[in-house]
Amino acid sequence: DQQVKQNSPSLSVQEGRISILNCDYTNSMFDYFLWYKKYPAEGPTFLISISSIKDKNEDGRFTVFLNKSAKHLSLHIVPSQPGDSAVYFCAARGSNDYKLSFGAGTTVTVRA
Amino acid sequence: EAGVTQFPSHSVIEKGQTVTLRCDPISGHDNLYWYRRVMGKEIKFLLHFVKESKQDESGMPNNRFLAERTGGTYSTLKVQPAELEDSGVYFCASSQDGNYGYTFGSGTRLTVV
Image (cartoon, rainbow over all chains, first blue to last red; front, side, top):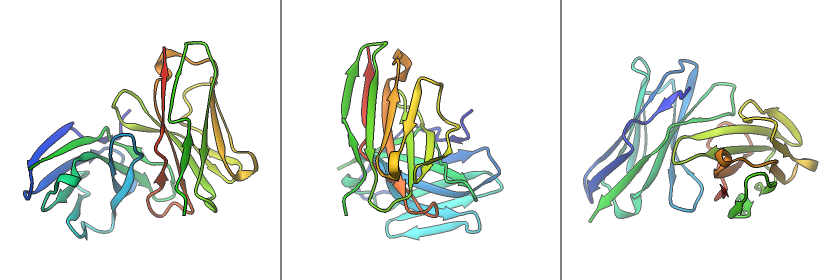
């Protein structure tokens, strides 16, 4: 059973605009959430994370929002740049668990 | 520092054959993980080593898969005999601790024909 879901397989956005990626989870034991970015033929690279005690974490152009009651998180990229074109994975884990549960990924294409 | 290295990058084998994937983690990282992504779906956990010990192997699909980490350094993942559904990209990752994101390798793309 898939505990982390990314329901949008793809997203196309114009350069300079905002990209919003969504992620839903079902396991209420998850308390740490991460976003990874993946280019073709490369492994996923860590982008940004958020603990369940927060509802927002910002790092430069990237902001992650967490809504625990809705079991939903989102990643905002603003402004979007051509180098942001990649697959983005949402991941989650429990507090004493090193194992990550991933979503299926969202492919972002930034148009010039 | 060198990243996580996986070998080979690609492997094409026939059903019933054996394949061994290798992962060299970042030096000093006690935690080593294997994950798999099949057909563009989610990345699924296979197992977790702490040094040479298997901490969690709950994601291993069946007994055709055998992972080892002799001496707590590099790790191998052997598939014997390979089946068509084993095709996918196998990622290895390592971390010093679990508080932040892992560092992933580039993966081994396995195709079973």
